[in-house]
Length: 122
Ligand SMILES: [Zn+2]
Image (cartoon, rainbow, N blue to C red):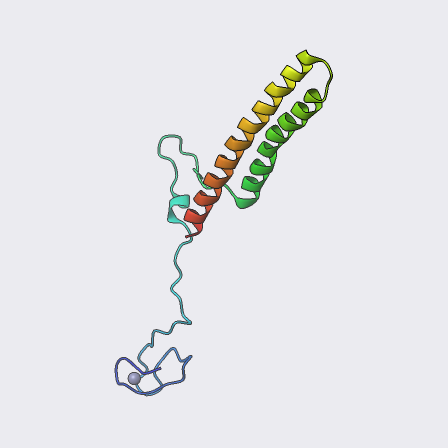
């Protein structure tokens, strides 16, 4: 690490020049930057602290919770389709369709949620 002021070579982790005392900007000394300044802005309309970011754990909970719907739909569909009663088979088809539609919606939601999370992480 060379001193920017006098050119004196110093220790790699030195923060100040040993010769002239000039401050040396090292990579081991990152500036303290606020994590997310947007988070600290209060909503002027309500006066409440607004927080748009959903925590990772809550996001996983929502994804797992919504996965419940397609699974139930498909299970109900399979149960009804195995019934000998033709009317119940029709109900089973409806359940199966609902399960598939919910599954597709769930998949899109999960992908968007993960893409959003990656944007937030950087
Ligand atoms: Zn110096």
